[in-house]
Image (cartoon, rainbow, N blue to C red; front, side, top):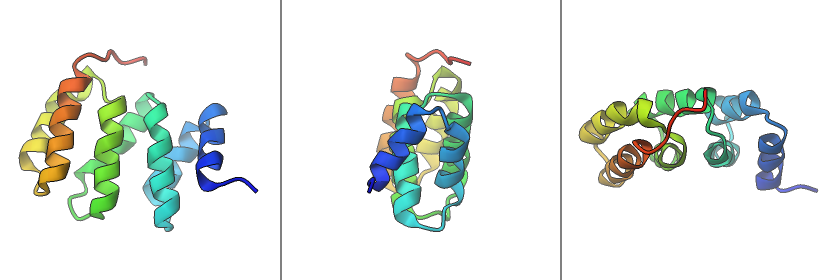
Length: 115
């Protein structure tokens, strides 16, 4: 039987970005949601970046989820998101998430969108 991480990796390999985004944004199971967000770190597509940016806007969201989203954006955000990441880092209440977002903003300047 496959582990949750293996199932998510299989979705990445098959190019099932829409399925991963759906699991990341609407799964009721925290472990499944976190696994999908982590899997999206390997998917730099417009849909995955947009979904992570939208999830970041939810300031009432679970801090564990928001931290995972910020970490994923550090890997997949492009120069198109740099200004928004700087903004979110400036208004973020959690200092750990703000730090990750500042790093993501710096790292995203180097990446050109693939879409």
